[in-house]
Image (tube, rainbow, N blue to C red; front, side, top):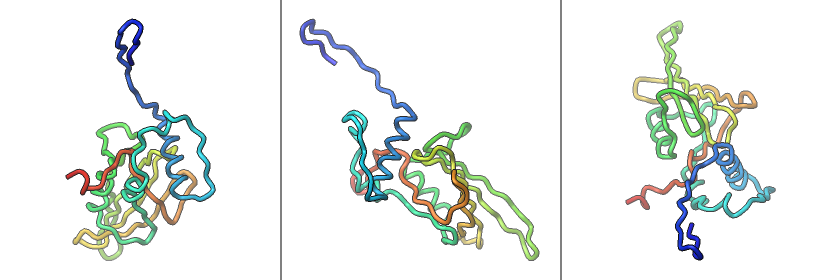
Length: 168
């Protein structure tokens, strides 16, 4: 900021409080998913959120029983600005691990996707069972903060997402 009387420039440091960011994501999600929402906030809380249409367009839904291509799903998460941490799991991160199990006929692989959307208080666990060697898998279960659920709507990890066309 600039103090005109003394012609002094004061540099300000900008930081994002993790809890405030989570509240912003929860409010954005509620506005996009529900019709009975009113948000009371200062302008500084909602300034620079980006375009709601692009935020919604970048989101994806998963249901138990859906057939997915795991690598395509990971690509979607990365385009929604989720990152894969080396160590600690934080909001906006995902981790992927695999469990090999022996069935009666052959071996199956279950992939466990731990995903922490920024609007959630805790990470979610999504089990994805491999169907074949061609990369197709099936969503086996979704476990969130409230227990097992049949579907989730995953919103971007950051408010500033852009369509591929606009990036070019």
